[in-house]
Image (cartoon, rainbow, N blue to C red; front, side):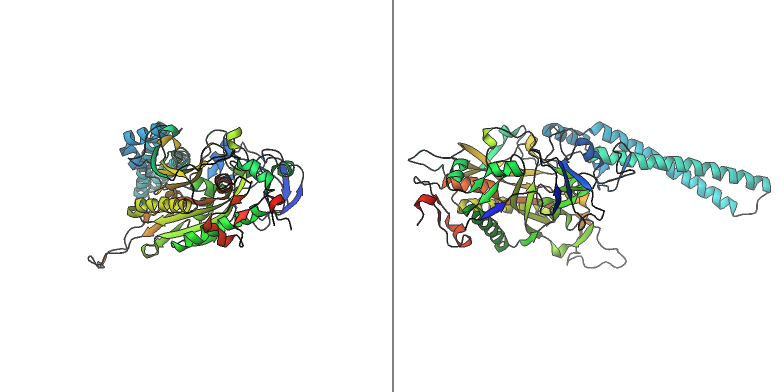
Length: 513
């Protein structure tokens, strides 16, 4: 029996008009379980720069993108800290080559403070007038106070409107300011990244090495041509043993993470645009990686980090519940804008793929140690499969806005003749939790004991971390290219065999028993 695994964008399409190479033609499908509206023609498209600015906002008209929007969420950004550490924040923005406008953020913050002071002054004056009105007064004096109170009220209405507008403008600008950077992070572009660890050495072959595309064709594992006709370029069908291999990789990665105390999850693969932004995924220019759904406030996820980060959104956790460790399986969708060329052929860079992601919420003083734990888990996983790889401490310009520090794992891919990224692990400190509203309440220490008349300890923001346990397509690339044999077969590494239904080797059809 031939096994097929269809890599497609959704399973509930009502009708399919066309599907372009960029996954952007009009689709009509029923989203009733997710988005309670009548059946509407929707366009799935990359999230534009203008859409990013209005993500999570209330639009006065769903058909008029030019309408003014009002943000529906606010990040708990410490503006005073930014102002007091202006030089460090400015240097960080420069080191990351971020487009954040710090001067404008500080200018808006100063204006906000001035307006707040004026509002407070007018409110105080209004209270004084109100108190005077309570006593016995001459009619002329009362009339004078009434007029004064009316003028104060009108002035307050104007100032409070200005205050709301400034608050929204400040949020929009400040949300683009990246996280601070770990002091050990190398400065510069990707080439400035430093090697943390080198594991193994490149496999040696006594025959001409094939890449995964050729191997997959000869072993009848993929169908890129049919997928291109059905869905567009950079989509694929997995076939035969490749289907079992994908399932094996997912089950192996999840089970290994569970052994280390991670709770397994499957996640929604459509999320609100505001949650994408709260996790810090702000597309840069027109080269966005996010697919959004038109006429809705929803996006397809590019990583399970987003829906997992949203599980505890707007909540206060008990300190005793920390750390929370999750391992999540999901399908992921990315535009891969601008990606082309031989280096990205085949399964290496695709629009949809399966991935197993680890995610941790912890106390601030523990995030560095959990970051170390995550990268060690990744290194153990890939070492157990026999991969040759290097772990990189990524340079400042290669860090996404949420990352305080990021380690990437690049594995040797002999068919492609280069190292390719298969995993990363990031410490995002409180960057995401300040946007997602995830706090915890510290418990009183045993030595201090409860203090009579004292309120509970103030809440603090948790730190969040994420790491890839298994990005399936690139793992398949590594497996096929590193464990190919001269007769065209591919050996399955020992750790995966219990999940392969007894299959130890993938053989060409002409030499199978």
